[in-house]
Length: 344
Image (cartoon, rainbow, N blue to C red; front, side, top):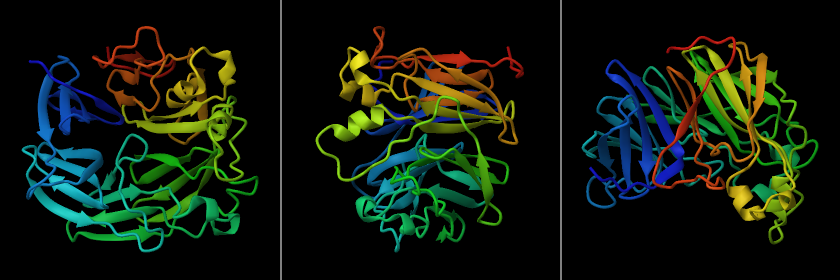
C-alpha cells in the first residue's frame, strides 16, 4: 500500500513484544501514529488522531504506547489523552502547572512519558519567562510531575535545577531523560551532571558527574537574541543531547553535539543548526560510569532520531545535509560497541 508520511523527527518509540519488534512514530500528515514491523519492514497500522468531535486530541505533542490497545497523547492545552487504537478517547487527564504556568505537555524522544506501575512521570524543563529568570530563582521551579492513572490525580515533584546551575552564566534549561528500574536519569543539555531520581520516593537521590572529552564549552546566553547571533553562538558551543537506556545490555547512551565553525561548511548556519553536523555518544555502564566514547563522521546522523532494539543501537542516517538524503524513507544503521553482547 502507498502511505504518505512526514515523520515528526523527535517523536519515535521502539516496542518490543512477543510478536516481534515495532517502531511507532508521529506522522504529521493526518495526523496519525504509524506503526511499522521492524523485522518485516512493513507498515502495520495507523492510529488516527481526531482534530474535532468527541475524540478530539488537541495538538498532539508526542505520544506513548503502553499496551496493545492503549495510546497516550501529550497535548496542547496541557492534558494526557488516553485512546485506543481506533482513535476512541477514553480519558482526558488535565495536568495543571500553577507555578510555572506551562501551557503544554510533551512526550517525545527527549522527555518521553515514563512509568512505574499505575503512575506516569512527565517533564517540563522550561521557565515561565526565561530571560527574566535570575540565577537565584533557577532552583525554585518544579519541572517534573507524576500522574496516578487510576485516580487521575496529578502532582508536581519538588525537583528542579541545581542552585548553582547558572553560576557561570545563564544557560538553556532543556534536559532529556530515561529510566532504569526505579531510577529516572535526567541529562541536562548544558551540565555534565546527571540527576538521579527515585520514582518510588518522588525525590532527587543525587548527582553523577559524567563528562565527555568532546563537551567543553556550553553556550552562555547573555540577553535577548539579536538576529541570528544566538544560532551562530549555539553552533559554536557543545551540549548534551538524548540519553537512552539499553535494557538488553544494561548500559546508557548519552549523545552530544560538538561545536563547529559554520563557515567551515558549505551549508549555511541555519541548515547546520537544524541538523547539527558533529554528533557523538558516551556509553555508560549501569552505574553511570563511562566505558566508551564515539564521535561520528560529519552529517552521519540525523539528530534526535535514535532508539535501542534487540540488535543494538539504531541511529537514523537520514540527515537532510547528506548527499544521499531521501525524505521518502526511514533509514537506520545498527551500531554495536565492542565488549557488549548482541543478538545476531
